[in-house]
Length: 420
Image 1 (cartoon, rainbow, N blue to C red):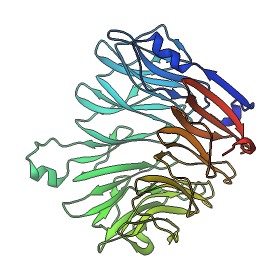
Image 2 (cartoon, rainbow, N blue to C red):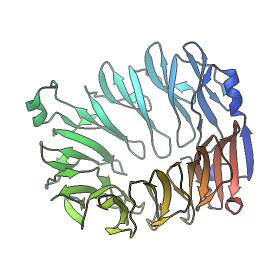
Image 3 (cartoon, helix red, strand yellow):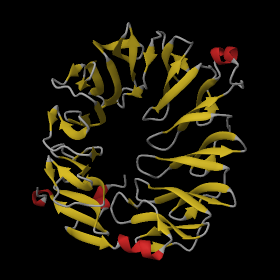
Image 4 (cartoon, one colour):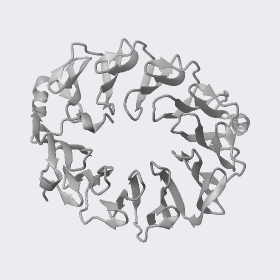
């Protein structure tokens, strides 16, 4: 996101009367807050077939036939997908790209927000447009789009052989591959799924089905030598560029790396692996048995398991601390380093670590209202909406963005004043 050091971290509460917007427009869609909290925006209907975006209570001079998928970029720019005269494009801070398309969807951002990509349908073929420029090659079908962290590269699974729905023989020979910046790999696959782009943007990996029964990990169009009963999405080590992926063989799951078994301990399920930013730690969500979900760190499972679900795993940059969301008996909890927090929630969102890794916060829903939790202490405010919290770079303050009694608040709170 835009670097928090440049944001306003003065203690205090700034307010915008969001609830008043409903009196000004025919209807107001779901609001979004910018990462720095300086803006709250929503798509609004101003007349029949006429839409605009309201930002901090003000609309732009330009309206559109239709607007959807409002999102803020990590660098706090406002993006929407807009349609006029039946053609679609992306608007960034209310300025449309110079090219229009048959349809656009699935806005993607580089880590710093400086580059924006969307999936595109143009003349009944599909590709990805980056900063308004469509791939030179487009395809009759496209799924599993991905965008590099630096915004320099994009990729998707594409269909490269025509076949009817009943043409089993062509399907078995392989009709799909990956397109990297629009250029398709030479090799064809029966199926291809989730893709990953290396941090340096030079390499692309994918999970693939080579035949009706054989699965493999593909790197730059070349399969690993060994095949498996099933595989999940590969990831690149940010330090070494090696590729790690969960693989299933003999009825159990293992972690593999560059074609060899990395973790020799078998699991009932193993997926959603992540490397720490320095590449020294590898963690994954796993099941050690039916209904026994846990987190595994470098092949060492936590000593605690959970019944229903684990999701949204977050690592500190050095991988020394890990937080996840767990669901048990219909309630959500935050678990940090294997320790359950005492508070349970109707819903919880991805946890956030402070820069020093000493504190954890999240926006949550409890008893039908939204609020925040910091180190298992609840923020004493029942809100109509709450967006993800952000820690200051020093880790001594937290930025809260929420709507209470129809008023949007941008509030900077010292951690010492966050009361339960």
